[in-house]
Image 1 (tube, rainbow, N blue to C red):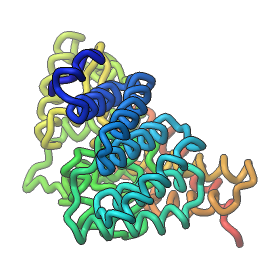
Image 2: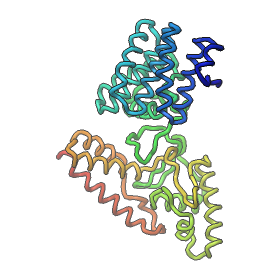
Image 3: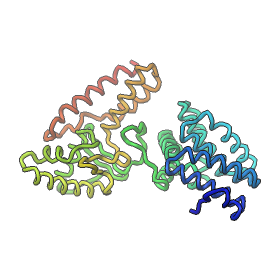
Image 4: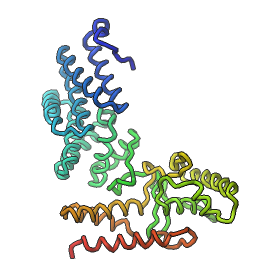
Amino acid sequence: MLLPSDEHDGQHIGPVFYAIGIFQKGWFYALKGDMDKALNLAQHSIVLAQQSKGRHFEAVATLSLALMLAATKRFEEVEIPLSEVETVANTLDHVSLTYSCHLLRAYVFLEAATRRQAIASLEQAMTLGRQHDIFFTYESWLPSILAPLCALALEEEIEPTYVRQLIRDKHLTLDAQTADTLEWPWVVRIQTLGQFQITLNREPLSFGRKAPLMPLRLLKELINLGGQNIALTRLSDNLWPDADGDAAYRSLLTTLARLRKLLGREDTLIVQGGLLSLNFHLCWVDCVAFEYLANQAIRECKNGNTERAHESCIRAQSIYNGSFLPAEDQILEVDRKRDQLDQLFQNLQAILPS
């Protein structure tokens, strides 16, 4: 992508192409995370679009400004440009602009905790998207906006086939440690409550006659310790306590390679600085989701947000299918985590109305 370097370029490539170049340059900085430059360039591209009298391009540039404002949480500044784009979209009967406006309005409502209005706008957007096969729009360049909207759509069963395709096409992810949706199409889902089960791309993993015991023990050990930034040496010591340090470490690396192969993707497990982590953008673990939702319910209850507390409580309880790794007794301190989760489940009973 060729980007204009200064105003002098406009004399050589013409005002329309120069305006488009400034617009692209704004998105270039937005995708790099430099939102201050991105916003300045978006505003500049609107002025240039007005000068070139390109009404459609002016609307697209204005939409980009509104999206960037929303991405930086400056919601009080979103309404004016968004309304301007809605007017043009209605006048031109422009489907993709209308789709984007509905999505952005849904995001603003969602962030303002007006869920019903968010759902209404989202239904309008996703219905248009399915009907017109819309997969390329500017908000798809900002996954921080599109991903939570897709999560809400799946929760509310709004055009689920289209939404899942959108998630796949745009490689959208959520952080499973803080995601409050249970419907996201995770690459890997791991059940530890009540029983141990791994699901890959919505298909249960089966092992035939002989299960790979050590890779599964490594996965259970990692989850028991929290799943994030666990020292490789700690894991090797726990899993091979009778082996010397070097031999245990080599066994761990071999077992880690086998576990990655089992889960189907190298990037499901991340090693950095001698620490091992589950990639929670790909892997959902029921006990992690339960802890997050249960603690969220308790926190909302203490803050007096009864309705939200009740919703989080219901979701948390739907995940809790029994004690943590009930058939496992070889993992160190598994009883401590099991008791902690059992107690958290008991604490939720006080939140639900009798």
